[in-house]
Structure formats: structure tokens, C-alpha cells
Length: 272
Length: 348
Image 1 (cartoon, one colour):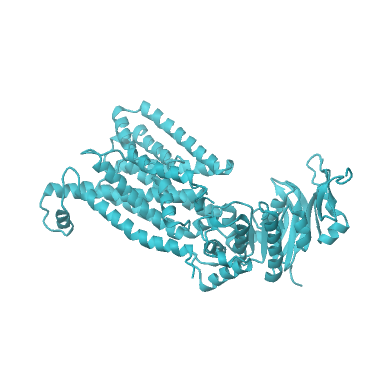
Image 2: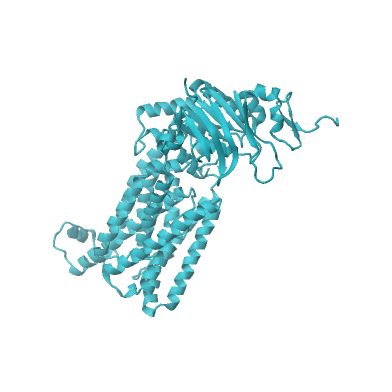
């Protein structure tokens, strides 16, 4: 049997031996776009950091293509998993082409010289995100949405089976947000990657991702640091059907509306 | 076909290189020729080609005083500029630099401890410099270590600059205390040293000074690949396989050594490290270290020579302290950069 591209086995996660959650078992396969949902502070970034090897799990293991990433040196890991963040980098002084070329670093030698093949891969990555015409523009001249597409192209050029994106659409307008999620869904499919994206954009996630990982806190007023968080895994359809989404913001004045495919204020419409 | 912006950078580099080279040579030669004793180009040629020097005094002045000073000016400017660029990329902060982050002051404190406290001021010749150099390396090393620790504790670029400035003040106050308890001659030599000068270096010192700086600058060229990855910040760089700890250590060691060597030999020279990388970025229109780093080194050398020229030719027989000149040249450029930072591509 083929190993899934990404597998979390019995993972416990957290800082300073203080677990946020334990016993996490999740998999993501080829061509799958997984949206990671959770309230602020639920630990979305922590989970992503664990997948990218930036944070070691307290227990259990993270496998990419069947290999435990804990034993893989950083420069090798860079060929297995790439990241995109919200962070505003200081990349404005590079051309789009130079920025995407940085993605080839795990594959190039000591001085980072690009071979003809490397250049082709960079061109293909730019074409895949529809930014070929921008190749020679300075990054500083791009809009936020264009810039994020270029960062995704950079991750593509890294040619990793797994891509982890930490709120890549956070500062984007609705149009760019939808476009980016659409792009990610398409890339996962056409490039055969497992794409994990954390987001607050519930409606885009429901419409465009094949699977949801939802971090819920079963006891928001939990005492004594008991860990009551769990990660619910399922397709958007299952999540809506079982009303699992209702648990996402337990105790808050919002409710999930299946018609709107989004959260709305509790009791919305009653007063009208 | 559209001309790419990358090509524009290459074109600019091609146009700039000869200009910078010609200017550097012109300033270098004028530093050899002009001063209290004037030497003609013909005399200079005679000296270089090994013919009979017409005037023994002039020969000695050129080879023993002016040549080491000109070399020292070029190398110091280059060293500080490269150190500045490395610090700016390491801390992801375009307003970082060895003087503003307190690294130069840390090196000064090290020198002060050697000269004032341990009585190195009475030593002569190279021995004195080795003591000063050891102190400077230790001082700048400690300062960089503190900055590294603080860079993890404080959020935001501006905060780190403030921490650097504060650390610099701490080192200054330690220097003042040392001065208070030191002997009068010690204080005198330390104050003269603190004014900054390229002319204290002898030919003999240069044999020590030049290789150190050239090796450190060459080492920085080996780090171009991780430097470019660091433009995206630490997380991205690590995700692209950069060994953050090792690369950061090397970057800090190289910039520390560059700052320390210049500080030990010429005094704490301000601003060049901060401003020259900006001049290089503005003139080349790129942040790509493949071109930015060599350009910064060359611009730095040129700036060093310019400061030396002003300090000699405006001094009217004497030599103006370099630290009186660097702020005049640098601060307008820094002001321009700060005011226009939303329009400058490399800030975005």
C-alpha cells in the first residue's frame, strides 16, 4: 500500500511539555487541498509548524511520503515541504523571477547557480500561478494578491510533495482570497501535492477544499490545563451534515448557516 | 521584447563599475600626490616604476605615510560597508549598521579596556594594535551576541535599533568611567583614537590589517546564497534549507571581525556601514546579494577614499577627524531613505 503524502501519527503538540492536543491522527493524500480551521489561539500555526518541521511534536511522529521527518536534516527536508506565510518579507528589491528562483535553493549547489532545468522549473511555476508576464517586474510593484501568488510560485519551484500555507489569504480582499484558494485547489490536483492551508475564511474553505481539519475546544472554560481540544477531520459535506462546524466557535455569539455556507451572528434575522 | 528589470540592474552595474573604478583611482592618486609636500604624477610614476626617486623625503612621505593611509581608507570603507550590509540582512532591518547597533561602541569599549585599564597605551608598534584588536574583537563580539539575544526578545525592527542604541550608550558610559580613572596620557591617546583617522596605520600595520579585511570580505561572498534566502525572513530561509544557526553565526562573526579590525586601527568610524548598502541598492536597484554585495564593497571603498580626501584636503595642513565628516556625508542620504521608504522597492 502506498503511504499517504502526509501522515500525523499519534501526535501530541504544544510548548514546554504543555500539550495543546494529544493523539492526533491525520492524513493528507496526493492532490488534496486541506483547509485547517480554528479560532484564534486554537493552535493552527502550531500544527503547521509541526508539519514543516519547525516544531518537534511532544509525542508521535510526522511522516512525509512514509518517512519520519524528525530524522531528516533541514536541507533535505526543504525538498519535502515548502511554506507560504502571511509575513511581509523584504523581498521588494528582487524581481519576481529572482524571488521564485529562491525556491530552487534546496536543489542547487553551494553558490546557488541555476541550471537550465532550474530556470525551466521557475518558468513553469510562474506559469502555473498565471504570473508569467510579471517575471521581470520588481516584487515591490505587485499588489498583495499578486505578491502572494508569486510566493506560492516560489513554493511550487521548491518541488515539494507537501505545501503548508499559514493564512496566506489573511490580508487579501475577497476576490484575491477566492482566487488564491481556487489556485491552491487546482495546484494540488494538477501537481499531485498535498496542500495544507490554515485560514479564517470558512466559506472559501468549504467551497474549495476537499477536506477540512477543524480544531475545536470541547471545553472553552476548561480548568487545570486539561487538554480538551480535538481535531475533527472530514469533507466539507460531512462537516455541514453533522453540524460539526457549530463546535468551531463554541460559546461565542455566532452560528453556522448552511445556506450562507458561513458563520452569521446568533439569532440573526429574528428581529426583522 | 521588454527589457527586464534584472537586465537594467546588470546594465547599471556595467555603467557604474567603470565610474566607481575611475573615481577610486583618481582619489587614491590624489591622496598620494597632494598634501604638505606636493608630488607630481611624473614623480609618482618614477617611484612606482622603481626609478631613482628625485626627492628622498617625498619618497618616504608617499610610501610610508600616504600610501598606507590611502589603502587603509579604501579597505576600512569597504569593511564597514560590507559589515553594514550583512547586519541589515541578518536582522532583516535596512536601518541596521555597525555604529547604530552599538557594535562599533562595543569594539571601542574593548579597546578602552586594553588601552586604559590594562595599560596597553604605553605599548608601541604592532604589539599595541594586537592588544587593541583583541579588545575590539571581544567587544564587538559581546555586542553582537547581546543583539542576537535581544532580537529574539523584542518584536519589531525599530525596537531592535533602539536596543542597539541603548547598548551603545551603556558601552559609552563604561568608556567614560574607564577614562575617568585612567592616566592622562592614556586618556589623550584614547581621545585622539576616538576621533577616527585613517592615517595612524603604518606600512607594517597594513600587512596585518589588509589580509584580515580581505579574508573577511571574501568570506562574506561565500554566503550570497543564504543571504538572498534571508531576504524573505528567518522562517522562509529555514524552509528553503538554510541552516539558520550556522549562517547567522558566520554573518555575525564576519561583520564583527570587520567592524573590530577597522575600529582597532582607525577608531570608531560611524555611519558608513549604515549608508553605503543603501547607496548600492539605490544605484543598482536590486537587493540581490549576487550584485549588491560586490557593489557595496566597491562603494564602501570609494566612500572611505572620499572621507580621507576631505579629511586631508579640507584640513589645511592638518587632518580633519574622519568622524566629523562621515555624518555630514551620510545623514542626508539616510534622511532621504527614511523619508522615501514607502517608495523604495527594497523596503516593501
